[in-house]
Every structure is written in structure tokens, then in C-alpha cells.
Amino acid sequence: MVIIQHIINYPEWWLQRLLASILLIFGYMIVTRILDKGISRLNGLFKKRRHVSSSISSSYAAIFQRVTRWAFGLMLLVLILRVWGADVSVIWTTFVGMLAVIGVGLLATWTIVSNVTARFFIWFWQPVRLGQRIEIFPENLCGRVVEENLMFTELCQDDGHIIVIPNNLLFQRVIRRTPETAWEDEKE
Image (cartoon, rainbow, N blue to C red; front, top):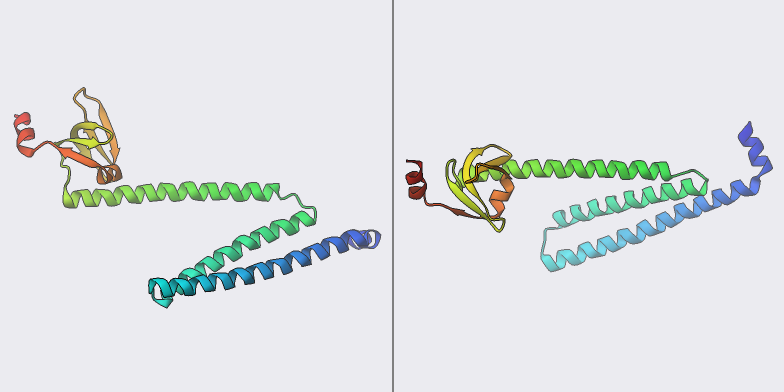
């Protein structure tokens, strides 16, 4: 009842917001159609230049179209809410917070997967072995390998300090190894 009374008392307010919302929706439709055509043209150019199979190229184009449509759809929703007088700062804060949590989660997952994968490659190719003295460049970290696990490798320095090194760092850096005969002589 209150809404009907408000519409009767303030028709120009409602009509202005309704017209602005309709214009925003039409603008969204026009922009997404232009983007779809542009993405299709770029996809065609990419296929001609790179000689990539059409199924792979088309799937990437479809993913890019969906992402752009979702992004513009969210912007449209925020704009329409603003037109109607809603406070979107709470929505924006929640959205940015969710993106931050997702980003941190993906970074942590990537780091874990990277370290575990590097450990398997290190076990397979054995650039370093337990008990071996190594030096890592350009960081100039040196010591004897005293512990290896899925995430880290531990080096014991000459002064007794332990350095914990992520496995992906061992896999990505230049390593100088002391020859096995030299470190076997040191053990005796």
C-alpha cells in the first residue's frame, strides 16, 4: 500500500529511475553485442595467424565472452542499484573482500602444488641429496642438506643455523654441489 501511495505522490521520481534502468539495460545489450563481434573477429584473426585448431580457439573465445558478459552484468547491476538509490558500498566491499580471499586461496594452492611438484622432480633427477653440501645462487645460501619433505628442504649451515628452503626455489635456482667424494671424506 505504501509503494502504491509513493508511486501516486511521486510519479516523476519513479519514471526517471525506470527510464534510466531501461537505458542502462539497452546500453549493456549494445556493448556486449559489440564486444562479442570484436571477440569473434579477433578469434578469426588468431586462427588464421597461428594455425590453431578452431575448437581450441573457439573455446577460449567463448570463455572470454562469458567473463566479459559477467563483468559487464555486475557493473550493470551496481549501476541500476545506484540509480534506485541503494547503497552499493556494502556490495562493493563484500565483492572485493571475496576476490581477496579467492586470490589468497589460489596463491596458497599454487604455492603448495608448486612445492610438491618440485619435490617429485628433485627426487627423480636428484640435483641434491640428503647429506650433500650445496650452495644456491644468486642467494648465496650454503649448507648441508639435512631434511627433505614435500614442501621444504632444510640446510644446516656451518654455524649450526638451519635454513628452510621451499622446494620450488631449489628447482628454479642454480645449485653448486660439493662432489660426492669430497663430502664423503668430510663425513669420516
